[in-house]
Image (cartoon, rainbow, N blue to C red; front, side, top):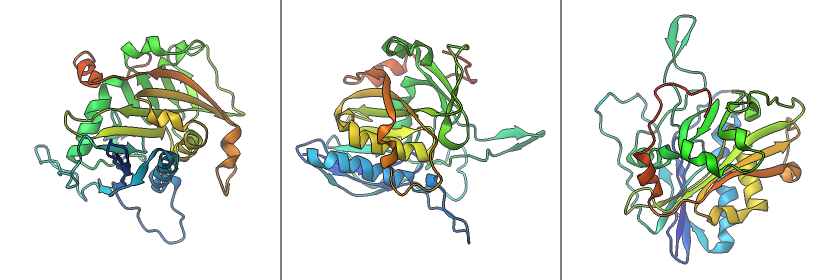
Length: 302
């Protein structure tokens, strides 16, 4: 039996045990600020909605809701050498962690604006926990570069790109609403259609994060609203993707989203095209990690 529990890298994740019954646990990394007269952005609720969508899809397969995990960042950034916070919840091979937000692998901590070094407006605070560290370490080999504006797959994954998508080894995104694809690093001739949303969603499932630890199930996109929409579409149209070991990149194509949709049903007509599906077996992540060097600067193509 098995447990599903949500735990986000910096927001929400869930864990579940790998038996006949699985437990779905939730984890939150930080609390939204209170501001009078200003509604909370989708980014503060996307992990919760993504977790609910995913759990709803897995419940028929015997998954049950489990304990939540807190991955809340510290009030002040830790100093170099400070110990990471240990997650108190016991997680073993019977559990799986759900991740509903993009992996924070290459996001800059500081940027230069008008000669001054400041934090980026879209800075994503980290939880500085041992579980967060272990998750980033196990997924790192599959992404040569990943931040909010670019996704570049590792070189060994290029052969897994499907026909018509060979140029999608490196994708650049608009850092604004809906995270539209704006350029293909391997295909300079490609141009976006301004009348549509064309972006990417990711489903990743690993057998284990650490040798004796939980598995990982990640369902996310490059932007908050699209992340919620993608988790809904996977749950409604392709729940089998949640059960398959491997990394799947999915192209989403649809019209612009209205300002106040009351449900996500409008997206059921969107195209969902798998551009890459790499089946991960055993401890592959550990084996390839030694072969892939994390780049020191942002690559322009792959």
